[in-house]
Image (cartoon, rainbow, N blue to C red):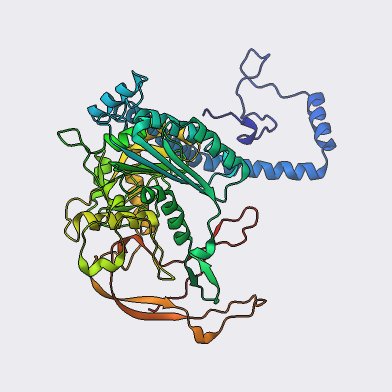
Length: 529
């Protein structure tokens, strides 16, 4: 931006003297002609008319302007330094977007399948092998804006691409309002596949409660979410003899239907063209740059995410997940993910699988969503289900492949504006990696998880908080802090998913006020040193 000239801020306009100019107009001999007495009297008269207060301000301004003149070279240096850096960043962004765009050139089989989907209107054109797909969604859709809008339209298109005869759609919504119910009914009338669209009130008394330090009995948020998701899977139990090849779980996100086809059928294929994964996840965005589902995602070493922009993962441990993202792979190995949309091998949800008899009490087969029962230990139900799946597929003996992968070509969003920006913002994201890594180290990410290295079947001693019943429950009208309970050493054999959690307690907000969240984070009692 060009500088504007502010001459009055740089120079003081004083009465001219003989040193101002050696030449005066109207003289031929080159000598200065002094002003006439009349001219000098006019100047003095004008000066005398200026109020004394204004004369003082003029003197002060003269001194300030002089000081600014001395600082000006440094200000100019800073300005041009900033301008140069900004120009270099813009040039780098343009060069990267054109010649080194991120995640815009998928493997060739993606383009073949996309062309097949676009060049025909035949139902099932995206499902080359006529695989049977169970599509599940657990939604929170006040007013029915999602089901009655872009999400509903995307689901209808997805059913057509898969082939209506190959699809069962299950949608579950808890405590839907009248508009949301109407949107579900409208969607059902347009579907040509088998379906179950349920709206009901989930009895909260059926969900296990925990005791907080104040003695209150509250519902863990993750226990509630796990139950809601499991209710979307209930049709699998109603028809246990029906075979499905894959299961696709969709959150309340907006997506391109062809991207969902790629997640199901293009991700990590072998030489025969068949996918090789236990689960494959999309990447979800809360805005055009920010990754959303950090709570459910863990890298291949079991570490939590870094700063939530590309390349998302840290270089802790082996840094495998981060390296594979930077290598633009469509199958980034992780321990857990979700990303708003996840595809699974369906067989793990359909029937009990053989497992270690020592862990038979875990009840992880057939696969369902679950929660951690310790009061002050939380792990996402969407992380735990991948940990359970990995154990069912590999037991304890996986070293190079967990079977859980993230496909960063497949991106979804929580609003249409963000979704429309994703094809453009991804093009320059290679530039973020250095800044991302630097910030991770400055902040200290990933944060420590004391149970990360525990594996299924390990016998461990852990610090677990428990309610001290002898302390008594506070009176209902007691408003002060009345914490009870303490940490105890608990010896036990652990199950899958220890890398998913952290010390926290999230409970449902029984009576949320306008603008409040539907859940509350309970203050963590100070753990022992």
